[in-house]
Figure 1 (cartoon, helix red, strand yellow):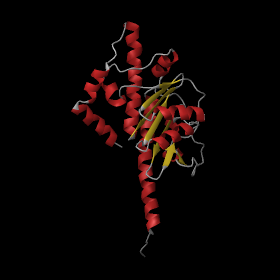
Figure 2 (tube, rainbow, N blue to C red):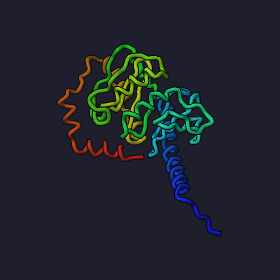
Figure 3 (cartoon, rainbow, N blue to C red):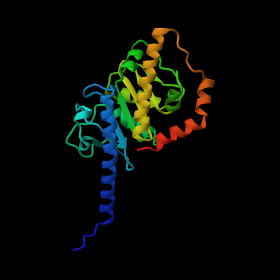
Figure 4 (cartoon, rainbow, N blue to C red):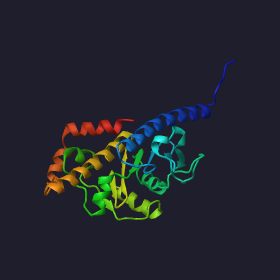
Length: 237
């Protein structure tokens, strides 16, 4: 007996297969955050957007190393409605929704609590470019917002506003957010941002660190090899 599927069923099956694939990748990088000290316990949250205006966000209260692919919570980006889940989504839903709503090009958002980033923000030290990779993946500026109560609409609005022209943001006394056109790009940006914070932290213990000038930054950004490396991350999964 031949089984025939309607077009709508075929589309649904293809979408589910595609979503499952990208969620496996997101979970893999989410677990790396825990392994590499970017979060502790159930802290931090990650999300990814599919091609149907649905974001899948990590659930509340579950450490990444205890998560399964099916634990990600689907939410409609336009309405903010939870589509189907047995779990509560991360409490930072407003932050993720607002960034996706203003940046159609973004596919992944990562929010972490890296120790050096938080330490510098707590003493009002801005993270600035000290080395080429920082420039390539984060650009000239990493904006910082003042401390705001987490999980609120106010914080979501403040953070999203910084992402109109940036790919990262420091949340004073809280953590950081990075975005990307791929999971790997968003994750790499978080790694580089925390590395930049750690290097700056150590450099200040030794003396007065040299910050790369705007001209030096532009020279790096105009290198063909750096454009190529950046494009590789954008096009990755």
